Length: 293
Image 1 (spheres, rainbow, N blue to C red):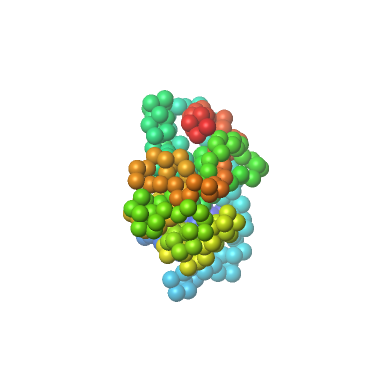
Image 2 (image 1 turned 120 degrees about the vertical axis):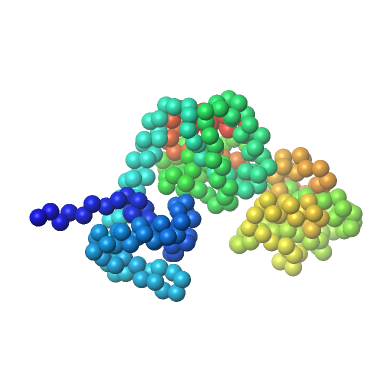
């Protein structure tokens, strides 16, 4: 009698996503599924294995002891499948299909659209999916085919190209500076309102190093989105630090201090080594590199 279990790969993906995200709703969003569909896939996997893999604790799912024992093996299957997908995509010589580009939300919203129009003109058979994210996408797990990053990536398994040295500076709406009184020196910003970013960052330290005497009390507004921060600044809520090339194309915004030392920002273009052998990904990569340079 053959007791061998035949597993559906979709069930494995559902299991791994649920482990990674800790809940069915978060895992369903990651996989682009409805929560009932994901629940059925998990139930099917447990039924065919004859095992209970998760226990519900509050609103979260927690691996059972049996689930933890299987996790390493299932995770290895996931890594192998991702690797297979990378190799298969890299072999594609078609100039038709989808290329996924990951970029920060400000870059995706304000700077990337003009480049996308040129991409479409150069190769109309290529469709672009833009992943707007302020986190560094994991190219090895195929969250994106190409990433636009502002930190130098780890080189293992990746091709990266330094495309642009940009600067970030202090900008504010003209009407806010009218109310504040245009500062003549960094010391004049001691009581100014600033727009900052959620979570740990070194912005206050960098400003202090440049002679701007700000503390947490100056940051009346905080957000996890550079787009939201820039829109707040455009509405006159306070001073924001943003890319110079974005600020220069925005009417009604002014550089706050003429002698402020800008913060350097590098723009890196990154893809997987094997994906760079795909004609459509190579075309998009090279055109992005040309435009970003």
